[in-house]
Length: 319
Ligand SMILES: [Zn+2]
Image (cartoon, rainbow, N blue to C red; front, side, top):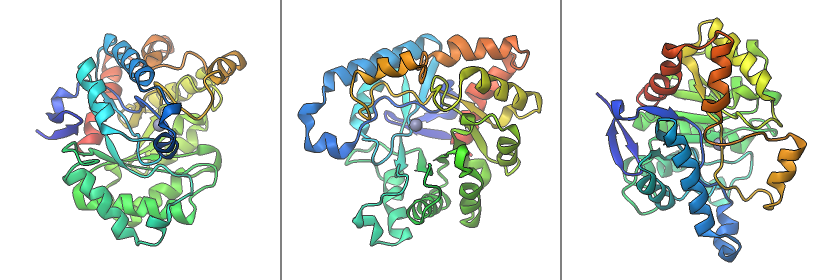
């Protein structure tokens, strides 16, 4: 039996239980937070994280995979505190969350040096702690797979090949980043069973998602509640069709919820909700609305639920 690193240490894979595979206990720009810490209310952030994670726990969630990487304000001490106070296991990552920008530090060092930084997080520990990263994170968005984005993908891939750690790649279906991302990982020799292409649920183009699945990767239908990218009914129809086509073992369902996020001023949340850009976005929406809807559509039974929320995350994390 394999083990998976969490912020509280390694756990046996069968201890992962019910998993939310893509949620953030806090998301903020680490540079702004470091330069103007007074603009952030740490207690408010902690309280929001505890409320969100405890709500998920009420639905049986035992593990939250939190893909907050560099530039998302990754802070494993904060994550550990949330894990300790809630009793929910949190799985941390290493990697760089950038749509293009790369610090000169990494721009002027080669791919293998970047990969070494990730390997250190996986094998030694993160941010001076003994908390180890369980997976690698990279991203491609509207700008596509730029030179810098490709460099990060290759570094992530090499760290994966070296350590065996799986990969989660943020993608943007609207500009068709997924196939190129998968191709880069393949060129670097990564087993596709270790790869999760996140945010595929932002499109209802079933053929596009199916094309990725056929390459052997997992796909994330992981932004439920973010109506701005695709409304719930279309997300559900897409998920139901993929389930009907027999792809339950390749799907990961989550919300990409951020208990707090500093991208917008505080009043924006209400504006987004009123405008319908987000709706009931939380760490529990999939249990409250999505799973019942998929059951109603005849696409999901108890076995399918177990496959998506227990078996798939375990299999991806231990591939
Ligand atoms: Zn995310």
